[in-house]
Image 1 (cartoon, rainbow, N blue to C red):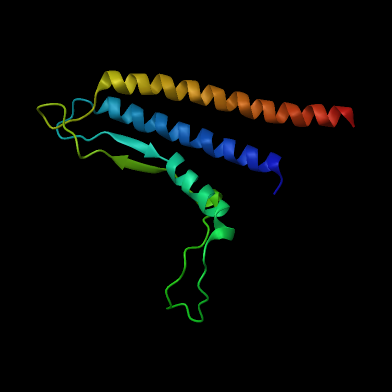
Image 2: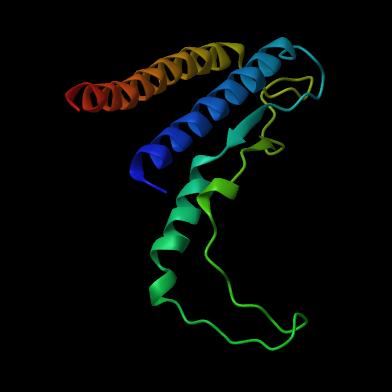
Amino acid sequence: MNSFSNSVDLLHRALDVQSLRYQVTANNIANSEVPNFKRQSVNFESELKRAFASRDNEHESFRMATQDARHIQSEVPRDWRDVEPRRVSDYTTSSKANGNNVDAEQEAMNIVQIQMQYRLLTQLMSFEFSQVNTAMKSI
């Protein structure tokens, strides 16, 4: 794959993750007074970083040769396109007497941050396509 399609694919996935984050945060706000509700967040970047690291370290790692599928398999590099965002519930904290751990003010700030990041990602996507448009005009 070329760098343009990789960039667009990665930006598209990042936009999808930001949309999921928005939904999860809105759900947290909606349930901020529900007893024993635990806030959720979305984990994506750390898994994506791990996938890129496994790809970059592929040539340096030791690989075992196996003859049978039942043998212990060595770790294979992970394709970044297979990384999916995960919802993670925070069961470790409880900030209210009813067992709920959602801080509505913090979640509102998260919404603003998500919106700003989404806007930035759309600008980056627009920039990628404007570069292609410029290249096509010069031909």
